[in-house]
Every structure is written in C-alpha cells, then in structure tokens.
Amino acid sequence: MAKSPTMAHLEPVLGKRSIVTAQAEQWKSLRKQFNPGFAPSHLLSLLPCILDRAWRFLEILDRHANTGDEFTLDELCINLTFDIIGAVSMDVDFRAQYSKSEQSEIVSLFRELITSYTNPTRSAATAWGISGQLRKLQRRKLARQIDILLKEHIKQKFAESALSSEETPKKKPRSILALSLQDITTLTPEILSQTADQLKSFLFAGHDTTSILLQWAFYELSRHPRVLKAARNELDEIFGPDPSPSVVRDKLLSENGDSLLQRMTYISAIIKEILRLYPPSGSARLQRPGTGFNVSLPDGTSLCLDGVIVYNCATIIHRDEAVYGPTKDDFMPERWLGNTDTSMQTNDQQPGPDNKDAGSKIPASAWRPFERGPRNCIGQELANLEARVILACTVRRYEFTKVGLGQIIRDDNGEKVVDDMGKFAVERPMFNKMQVTAKPVDGMRVTVNLAPGA
Ligand code: HEM
Image (cartoon, rainbow, N blue to C red; front, side, top):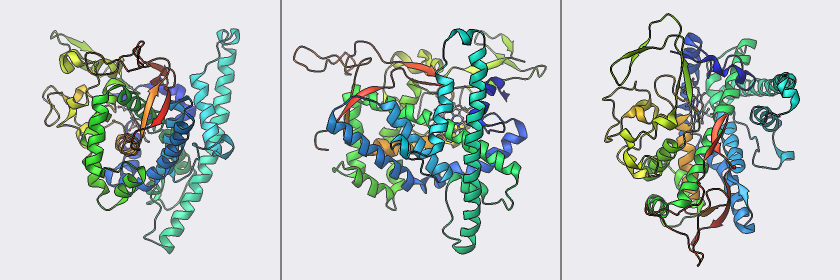
C-alpha cells in the first residue's frame, strides 16, 4: 500500500521530497540514508545534548514552582522537544525555551507556519476562498524563508564535517544530519534540497508528538497516586534515594547510563500506556486501483480496498474491549509489565493474529502509536529516549496540579477525592482536540510544586 496523498496540503511544512510522503524507491533510499541516525546506539551518543536541553526545562519548572503561577504545559513541552529535535537532528541550538528575542529565526518562522494550519480565520472571506488563497501564499513564503535558512545550515555543517574529518577524524559531529552527509562528497543542489526537506520533516514530526506524550504523562501521574509512587520507587532503586536531577544526569552520562535506561521498565510501561490512551498522530494508506487488494472481515466475507484510503484509527484500536478488557479506558501501566519494549525491531513485524509481543497477552498489532511495518515511525526510539530521560529527571522533583478542565475534586476539608479505582476523581474529564495532531484541548493548564524532599 502507498502513503495516502491526503498529506499534500502539508507540503510547505514537509517539503516536496519528504520521507513522510515519498513513495517506493525514493522512500526506500531516504529511509536507508537516515535510519543510522535514529538507531538506538547512535541516539545514546546524543544523550548529553538531550540532557542539556532538559536542563533549561527544569529551570523553567523551578521558576513556576517558586511563583506558583498557572501555565500551559503544551508551550513548555513544545519548546523543550523543539530544542531537542534541533540539537539531535541538525546540531543547532534553537533556544526555543528562551524569550522570543533570543530564539533562532527558524523557531519563529516554523511556529508561524504551523499556526497557519491550526488557526484558520473564520471570516466571510474564507467562505469565498479568498483568505484560503492568501493563507496558501503566506505558507509558501514562510516555507521559502525556512528553506533558505536550512540550506545555509546544511552547507555550513557539510563544510565543517569535511574539515573535521581531515583535522580531527575522531571528533566528527554526531547529529542525524552529519551522519546522513558523511558519505557525500559533493553537495549538489539536488542533495541540498532533499536534505533540507528531511530536516523540515524531522522538525515537524519530531516535536509536537513527543510533547503531547509528556503532557499526558505528567497529567496522569498527577491523578494516579499509586502509579506515581511506583514510578518514584523505581527511580529511587535505579538512581539512588537522592532525587536531584543533577544526580540523575551524572548517572545517565556515566559509562553504564544505557543499562540504567534499560532498567526503567515501569517508566517505559507508563510511556507505553500513555501512547495507548492518547496516540498523538495517525496514518493513512492508499491501495492503488486495480491491484485486487482484499481483506477478510470478521464475518468471513471479503472486502476489496482498491482505490480506497484506509485510516487506522489508533484511538479505537487501542481501546478495544476484546483486547484490553474492562479496563480499556483506564491508565494501567502494569498491563505492559513483562513487555515494555517499544523498539523498532519488534515494531516492524507485520501484524497477524498470532503475533503477540513476548510475555504479553496483547497482540502486537493492538498497540500502534508509531504504526507498524517497514513504514513505521523512524523517530520512535528518540521519542522513547527523550521521554525516559525527562521523566527520570522530573517525576521525583515535581507535583503538577491541573487547573480548569480535568481538575481534581476536593472535599470540604480540601482533601483530594479518591474514586473506586484509587485515582483522584475529576469533575469534567480532560480530552484531546484535533490540531494537526491530537493534543490536550486546553494546552494542559497546570500549576507546579516541588515534591516533598525534592
Ligand atoms: C510520541 C512520539 C511520536 C509518535 C506517536 C509518532 C507517530 C508516528 C506515526 C503514527 C507515523 C506514521 C507511520 C506510518 O505512516 O506508518 C510516524 C512517522 C514518522 N515519524 Fe513519528 N512519531 C513520534 C515521534 C517522532 C520523532 C521524535 C521523530 C523525529 C524525527 C519522528 C519522525 C517521523 C518520520 C520522519 C516519519 C515518517 C517515516 C516514514 O514514512 O518512513 N517521529 N510517526
């Protein structure tokens, strides 16, 4: 099946030759070129820059904890993940977590571009298609500006990498961009354009999704005292009783940092469960007409999907009672213990009725936030790594309190009310809205406190 052409409107964001929309041989060659940069062993070498960007995030949270003010986690987490994707994909400091005047120009241009998709003006002019045309022109202009900046950056990194391999062969730059350029001897205009498109795609696909994962994780942890306690116990066991982020950072950067990350099985189960309940994005496939592609339906009949765009709705699949039972809507990380693996190796299996992940009763194809098969998410290891590192640094340090929608009910004595499932009760549940991705409807408005003992 081919990628559905429904993403054509995203061309200004992704570029013409994006890995996200490329087909057949062109896609295969792009995937081959960029896969090494997303391999777990390579990503681990980028741990210092992930921790470096996480540090700024902690400073901002500390500031909010001091003032006690209300803020949206969406903004903070988006800025954090944008900074991380900038660092790991193209070795640049976007300074998205700093004031507007200090941010890289790419950040403001990219933001303006994304906003043009998420904030359509509803006016009489829209009805006549006038503002629609203007918006298209505006998007193209922003895309051109971003393109120029990215190409300048690629040229500079290409020159630096040629120099570093001559002068200090061991000190090669390690970004995903640098790795993809290492076998290239001449930076032709074609390679330059194609590489700029992939960087745009990584920036787009690699920040909002991970930010949503973090926001829901912080929220669900704030509602489930039992899960929060178990997560903190695991971190105490792995990193020792001192919850200071600097202790966690030093241990992660030590020689056995990788094995500490591997031991974070409960935290990984939390990540897996958050992605089950709140998958941020989805995918669609188009079966070309005339290819005779038939699927069997549960009643034994057959359905031809030629010429049909098929959309796998992960939210429905992930809450199937036949698979997840009566707790399908509950946040229960324990259901994944024994199978917290989310790696590409297991995730690129083709789904089938007997294809169950080791140690689990849950069929592998029933969990697909990164989709499955060869065309699955190239950045899933990076998302998992980011989430584990950030949760390791924050879970014992902060306590978040939701404000407004999804706020916890308190009794007459001001105590949080616990429901039958042992979680804190809320009056009106939080939910996602559709804004390119599926994201918390109010931007996840919270206050934050330092946890006792932090
Ligand atoms: C929680 C975080 C993330 C989620 C839930 C997610 C989800 C997805 C999904 C559902 C797809 C579509 C796969 C398909 O069509 O079969 C996808 C593709 C993709 N994702 Fe992610 N993603 C995440 C993080 C990232 C990150 C950090 C990057 C970093 C660059 C990234 C880059 C991409 C790219 C380039 C593709 C296209 C892959 C291809 O067609 O070969 N994603 N992602």
